[in-house]
Amino acid sequence: MQIEQNISLRQYNTFGIDVQAKLFCRFTGLEELDELFHKNLKVKTFILGGGSNILFTKNVDGLVLKNEIKGIDLIKEDLNHVYVKAGAGENWHQFVQYTLQRNWAGLENLSLIPGNIGASPMQNIGAYGVEIKEIFDELEAYHVKEKKIRTFSVNDCEFGYRESVFKKKYKDDYVILNVTFRLNKKPRFNTSYGAIEQELQKMEVQELSIQAIGQAVVNIRSSKLPDPARIGNAGSFFKNPEIPEKKFQKLQVAFPGIIGYSLPNENVKLAAGWLIEQCGFKGMRRGDAGCHEQQALVLVNYGKATGKEVLDLSEDILVSVKRKFGIVLVREVNII
Image 1: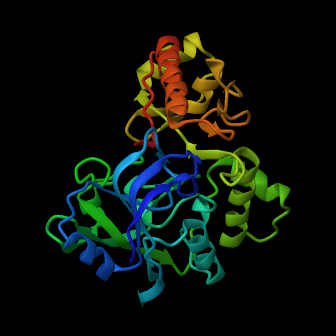
Image 2: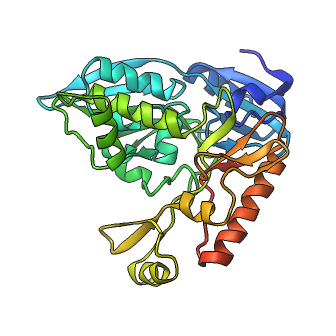
C-alpha cells in the first residue's frame, strides 16, 4: 500500500475531468483501509469508487482513497432466492453479466449502468422500472471515526429516489465494503417501460428471458447514451422531478406535449430531459462542455472541459427550466 503525491484523477472519473489529488492511495481490503485510518491522518479523505457520478470542479486538497475491494460470493440460498455478496470495487455491469450468466434474476433492467458496486446503494441506482432497494439485502460499511464495521439493512439505508443515508445523513462517515443482493431463482420479468417491449420486438425475441431483457437494455442505453470511454459524462446529470397532479394538469394546459408519469403517491414524475430540451439546450456546446445531442439529460465533456465549465452549463439549465416551467431541477451528480 503506497501513498502517491499529485496524481491526476482524469482516468478515475467518467467525466474525464483533469484535476489532481494531493495524495492518492488504493485499498483492496478492510485491513489496508483500517491501517490507513489508524494512522490518524491529519488530512481530509475522499473515497473514490468508479467515479461515475462525480463532477470534479477543483483539485482535491487531501487524500483520495480508491476503493478496489473485489470478490463475488454466493453466501446462501433458499427455495426462491440466492444471496450474492460483491465487493464495493467490482464493476457494476460486469457483476450484472455475472448474475445473468448464472440465471439469477433481478438485475437485468440495470444493465450497462456505469460505476462500481459500492455506488449502487449510495445512489439507489435505478433504470427501466427497477431500483436497487428492490433486490438489496444488506451491506457492510466501515465507520471512519469509530473504526468499526456496521451492517446496514434495507431500512437502515433509508432509500429514496437516487438517495440513501450515505449521501446526506452519513455523508463521509462510512466506506462501503460490500453489498449483498437477494436475487430470484424464478424470474419476474419487468418490461413495463415501452422502450424495452419495442426493443424485444426489434430483436425478434421468441421466448422472454432475463438475458434477453438485459440485452435489450444494453441496446437501448447504447443507442441513447454516450460511452464515457469516448465522450466524458456521468449519465443522467439531473433527477426527474416529481410534482403534484394538480400542478401537472396546469402545466399540460400551457405545454400540451409535456411528459409525465403518474405515481402511486398522487404525484407525477416529469421527464427532466424533455424540460431541458424545450429550453433549447439539447445538443448545445460551449467549448468542450455540452448537452448531449441525443439525450438532453446528459451533460458531456468533449475533451478538455473543466468541471467548472460543466457546472456553469448545468446552472444555466437550472435557471432556464425554473423560468420556463416553474420547476426546480436537482442535480443527481455529486459536485466536488
